[in-house]
Image 1 (cartoon, rainbow, N blue to C red):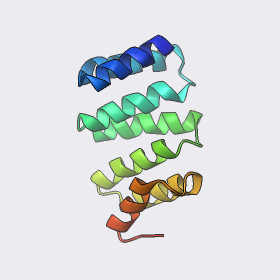
Image 2: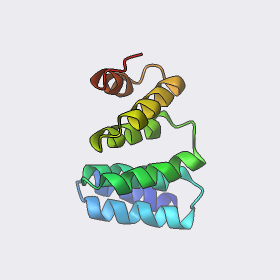
Image 3: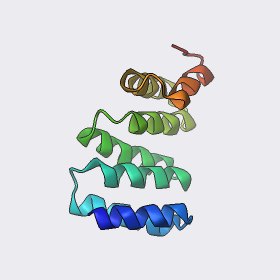
Length: 116
């Protein structure tokens, strides 16, 4: 599983997003309760503009790792893109509850007029 994550990271860093998504998906299939495959594939899907599927991957990641502030933040960013203000605000607030110094979550709240 870690080999897929690591190779996916290399593909991500070299902007081979389809290959990165495939490797992260393979990691999620091998170890479905490990949030890393879901979280990383969610990020790639957001990069690719596939917001709804990115949210679905973050939903899975958060099911298995609810203490990951970055997954909450990224899902909030995705919800904001889709116009789901209430969902985005809730996710940004959860991200800040876990990591109060997460600048992008704070900026997201400000952008939505819901600053903490």
